[in-house]
Length: 218
Length: 180
Image 1 (cartoon, rainbow over the protein chains, first blue to last red):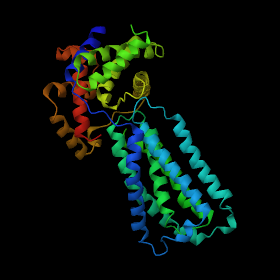
Image 2: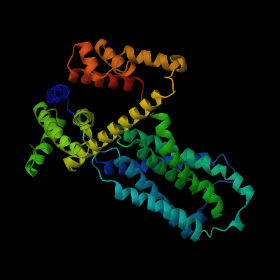
Image 3: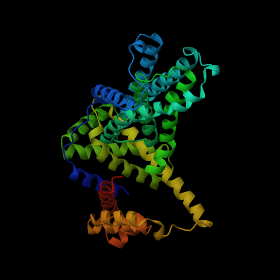
C-alpha cells in the first residue's frame, strides 16, 4: 500500500512542469467586471431594440427607488461573480460571501417588490403580464455573455462543487442580465416585475443547481 | 510526521518551489500532503483501503490543481478543501455502487449497446483511439469490463500504482477528447 503511494509520488514528480499560478480570484473578478457590465448593457440595449415599447429613459434614473434597486441588483451580481470564482479556487473561504449574495438577493426581492413597489394585486394586468416575456428575452440574452465569461474563468481553476458553482454562476449571470434589462424596461407594477424580473433568477439558479449537473455532468 | 508550524511553512515553501518546476520540492510536498491527508481522512473514514484510495486521489488532484494555489492563502486550507472534495467524491462513489448493486440484485438489466446512439459510440471510439495501447487496455479493463485495479494489474503484469497512473493519464486524454 505504502509502496504504491511512493510510486505514484515518484511518477507524478517526474511529470512535473512549471505552472503559471492563477491570479487571486478577487483580482480576476474586478478585472472582468467592467467588460461584463459593458457587454451585458450593450446586449440589453441591442435586444431591447427588438421591442418597440422598450427604451432608455432619463426619468427612470431620477427615481431614487430605481437607483436603490439597481444598486442592490448590481451588488447581487458582483457578489455572485466573486463567489463563483472563489468556488473554483480550493481553500478560499466563501461562506460569508455566499450569505451576502443570497441576502442581497432576498432584500432586493422583498424590498423592491413589496415595500418599495407596494406589491398589490389590483395593479395586476393580465395583458401586461403576458407581454412581460420580453423582459425574460432581454435579461436572458444579456446574462448569457456574463455566464459564458464566468464559465471560462471557473474552468481555469478547479471546480470542487459543480452544483454550487453553477448555482452562483446562474445567479450572477441572471442578476447582471436583469440589472441591464431594468435600464430599458418600461414595466412598473411590482407583480409583473416579480414574475418576469425576479422569478427567472430564482428559477434559473434552481435549475442550474439541480438539473444541469445531472444532465450535463452525469 | 508533520507536527509543527514550521513543517507547514516548509510545505508552503515546497509548493511554491514546485510551481516553478522543482521536482525534489514537489516530492517533499506530495509526501507531506499525503501524511496530512491520511490524518485528515483517517479521522473521518474507518476503512484503511478507502483511506488509501482517497489519499491517492488527493495526490492526483494536487497534481492537476497545482496552479490554483496562491501563496497569499494558507496551504492547509487549500489541501483540506481538495481532501474534503476527494472524500465526498469517494463517498458518493461508494453510495452509487451500493445503489447499483442493490438494483442489480433485483430486476434492472444493464443498458444494451444499441441504446447508446451510434454518434456517441463513434465519439467514444475516436477518443479511445487517441489512447496508447497500455492506457486503452487499462481503461477497458477498469471501466468496460468492471475489473478492479488489482485484477487489472495482475492481468497486465503491472504494479497497481502503474495501473492507476495509466488510468489517470487515459482519463485525462478522454476528458479532453470528449470535451467533458
